[in-house]
Length: 289
Figure 1 (spheres, rainbow, N blue to C red):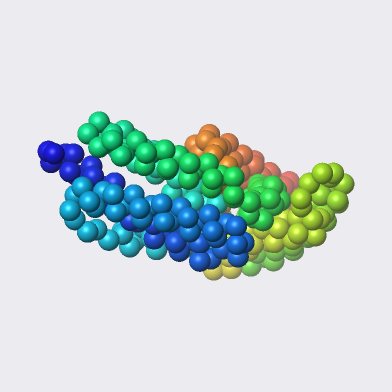
Figure 2 (cartoon, rainbow, N blue to C red):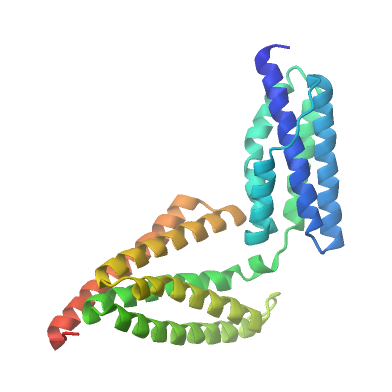
């Protein structure tokens, strides 16, 4: 066995050991007995694969501890679905590695089949509450980003005073959050054949909207210059768009850049239009705050 073949085996072994610990940690956090049993079974399969490679390499390897910690934190913050699907995205490289190994290690083909089976089992298992209500979260986030960044941009030139802008923006945002929550409640209640409750849908929409409002208004409470505050607010909006688009791309297997460009363009477009509208209103009414 030459150097490159041995390195491929070591890479496979390290990956399997790491995934064993990841799935084992994820299993501990599962309340559903069936889901926990599945994750534990996959963890044992990964350990069996690692032992197979260890017999060939003659080396004992531990997991990549940073990766184990990263996926554990991701599962806790963003949910099991996000953590698992992000990890499975990395399986493409592993599958290619198994294809190379299969040429001189027949067992690699069976390992590759196990990995594919794991992915199918996981996709059939994943059913998180946060994903059932992701539509409500999308509604709250996108509306808050588009509406409030537009409103704050308009207020920035119309009012100029950061404290006043923050006060008006907060009132506008809270009222809009309650309105969106009420609309989502009525919309969900009118739906048929779904597994979402109207109250939870309203809470997800309203709380997402309100949290976004707070994040967008904070710069106006901290900065003394309105244009500086607006610049920071727009930067925060872009970070929110980036993070949420990536979350959706991973959990829903959607293209990232197209959706990010669409949402970012819409948010910035409305903010730019509102900015000039605010300037026009200020000039028209002769407001000098």
